Length: 294
Image (tube, rainbow, N blue to C red; front, side, top):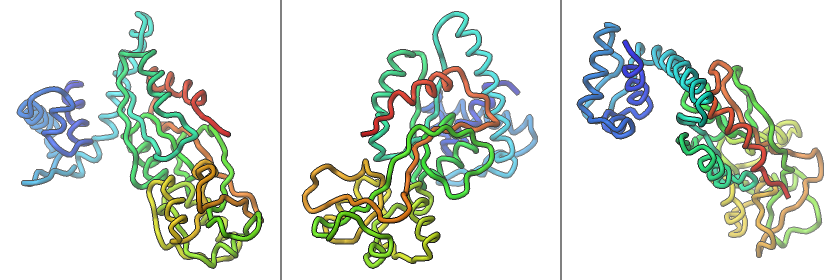
């Protein structure tokens, strides 16, 4: 068994496709298939269940995946040490990101990092299941680091650094009376919110549970930046981080909540069981410079 065997295995496991893995590795598909077969013969176990339209990891493959990633991480660490002596970073940073988080200038961060370190490739992906999904993917070794917001039950094994805290506000129609609003008053209307697992949903669910109140979530939106549009069209109310409320938006206003203050957090996290590569550490050092509040 050599590093190439493990590299090919991880690529197929992450892509769940020999074709996509071959494209990612810049090799022919037959080479990937032959390498996986050779690895299975060495281990005397099938690593993938192969079907006509899809493949899946077997129990043996699932057990091998974190160990394979750890070996590849160690090998990359050795390359990083040599590269730093010779000057210049090399490798790949796998980044998990949230969408519609405008207080993080992610394009600016990625542009600066890739300009300063052209030898590093950044592969970025968002998790449709929100911060909870990003955290699990981080623990599973799919990401080197991830930007997260609040998690209902933060799993063990993460190192989390808070980058910003943002007050949450009620998004209501412009005709709403008064300069503040209570949780009880909002609960009389349908809610537009994110699905379970998203940080802003966690904060609001906790607040209503603590107040002993119930609300009805009528619409779930993955992009928190779209919530104001649903409110504008009379479909309900919402509670979102202040940055998601457009300035001077016709038909809308953002009101402070009369009661306990609700805060949304932006954090960056790594998995404690994986030693961050030099490229990942450098990316982490830059991240805080690209948070914009106010």
